[in-house]
Image 1 (cartoon, rainbow, N blue to C red):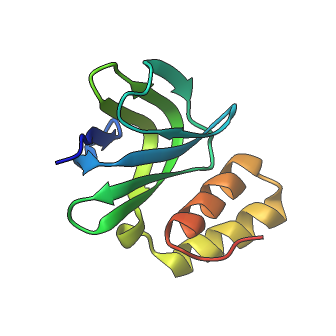
Image 2: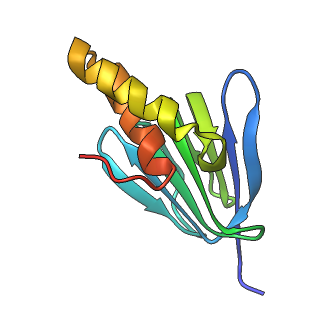
Length: 129
């Protein structure tokens, strides 16, 4: 059996998801990063419009979440913690509500809300300009 990462996605309110995966891809303020078993320890800031993907997750093959602000922490023991200000699993995202939020944020010029709406839609598998 190949080595797996232990991944947890948490917000201040609750644990969003925890389990094993082969690779984590997350958008940080420095750009997108990929983490596989054996990755060096690192701490990085999540972008405010991040989508986190856990590839090779046992239950579904892939877990996607919209994550806003916070940190990605990689330990030397194969543990990846996504500590987000807010986070939402793709299957929990109300796409119509996110589209409405995207339109409202674009009209008001609220870049933070615009990024959050875009990340929610991308996590849910929607095309976003």
